[in-house]
Length: 439
Ligand code: NI
Image (cartoon, rainbow, N blue to C red):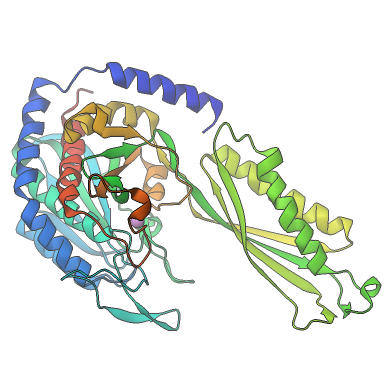
């Protein structure tokens, strides 16, 4: 977030705090939605348990897609399958003309072996990257699918009062595709999921295992980080380890580069504006104790919360790596690839929808401004094309210490299902309020 955005965000927050409650028409519709969502609870939990017991890795979500498509068809929606491999898109036309709003849920599970003792715990196993692994919904995408199926049912029951169209996007492979494989939100966008009819705004939710049931969390602007992978090939000259003066030692040079990269964050980045991270996760080079190799490869990740900072850090990495290498008489080839952009909540849209979040949660103090997250989320690819808002929904039992609950992506990850109804209400309320809002 640059300085200007910070002030806009702060100003936006103040405006939102002073915003009038929903219009009478919205209030009646929102109340109906809350009631219908509550009535969906048993179904949503049943869907979630079934999906949890039968998790599928990214780009393989065929069973999941079948369940979603059958449900959307039963509601009378226009359904497309096989979008970005295994994705499903449903279109609900309201009773009156109006804008187009999209709601998104991700569908994929992770190569994690479940350790929870639950009647519907996953026993699934599969091959991943040449290894046999367990498969588990260890990030809660099972709850996302179930909540969006519930929201589709709720919204189809009020469709005659909706001015506009709702696109339900069930997205595969949020956790990433295998090397060389395309997938996820990026492929959906490339295939035109935001066109025909053209989407005006998009909303998504993520369950959170460390946030109490009943709470929503959001952040205007950079909410989750962009994720870039960098590779630095340090090329020197090989020699016997006993005669280093005959070499250009890429091990020592690469070590200096690792430390130099850390000074980009600590000495050259405006940390009061936004957080940023550079992590070197791999150092590869050499085959034997007494041979200086001719090359060392460094690989790592970059996390940033705004585009300007991202671009600057890319330049800083190139300059630091090539400069340090040159000082040693070596060379450094730097390659940086973006995996996900910043999950950036449009400031105007966030401001406009904040009252809807409060309506859904039932009170303003259940809607919490959260700190930026340096994890990434591929919802960002949709937000690059249209204004979007991504909200966290509490999935932790009230009164629990977050430090004792299984984190996302681990074998002990678990969700308190009593939090799911708020997710359904939030998705449906955001869509209905967006369509019925005064332009
Ligand atoms: Ni996730």
